[in-house]
Image (cartoon, rainbow, N blue to C red):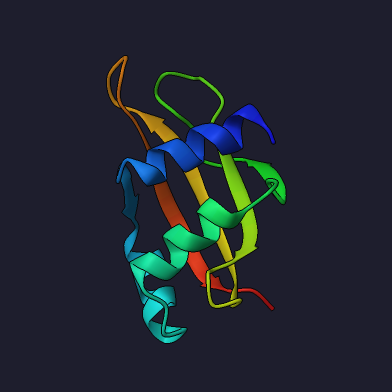
Length: 103
């Protein structure tokens, strides 16, 4: 399991995650709860894809988006896209940009 996936899982386990408005709309359209999404991330065994963000950061550091496809505890396949965000030296959280049923 990759170091990034472990960091993402630890952030989710600690409740340090947030959803964008787009992710919330997709979740509602797909009848998904926050718990469904969290379970899916915690069940993941690998990151499906890493994408370089198109957004330019003021700090000029590279920003990556991580796509995770995994099932929740009911077996429903869910696809999420998010990024790790560091607000302070010690605090990291996972910001979900997209959360929907996988095709």
